[in-house]
Image 1 (cartoon, rainbow, N blue to C red):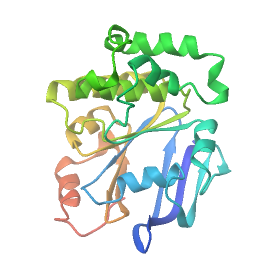
Image 2: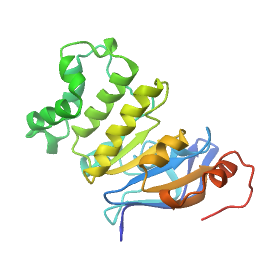
Image 3: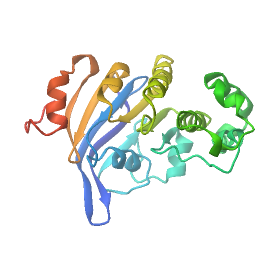
Length: 242
């Protein structure tokens, strides 16, 4: 099966500091692919490079078979690649509904904004209850739902989700992971960056473990040996696996 999104031998970083070292991985259509790894391993940098927020100095990124390396971020969104960033990044001084409508700004989405808004409210009923409230009044879990709903308003073909469980209570983490699992069951293509290995493995189809800017493990989720994964995660095993 051809991948919907491909990253081939990519190098990228921040100024003179390189973070990704010849990173290669593929994202199949209709699956939930999880990117695991410790802090500083390159997970968020990978998503930012895919989105064109950080330039790749080597290698290439392709989407639907087209080279989109260093494409403008707004063009990536127009093509159907959407990122739900770490830390939610909602507009706190705008209402919940206005935050969602921001997601309908791309030209291709505007004609269907009402249908997509109804879809977001069906998926996240609490957002409908709070539609006229300022986003600053939301709890952490509700803010994460708002960020996810805003991303879905952009009619994505691929959803990049960065650390959705960060700072949330365990019961809310379960709810957010359940939402991602439902999206996967709908046939959505999802790339999930996460540090909670147990929660991520429970909903993932495929797992890539990233450490030191490289992929050190790539396996179907149901084939992962958790003890071995943790050895690699914490650099207790210096042999790469594939």
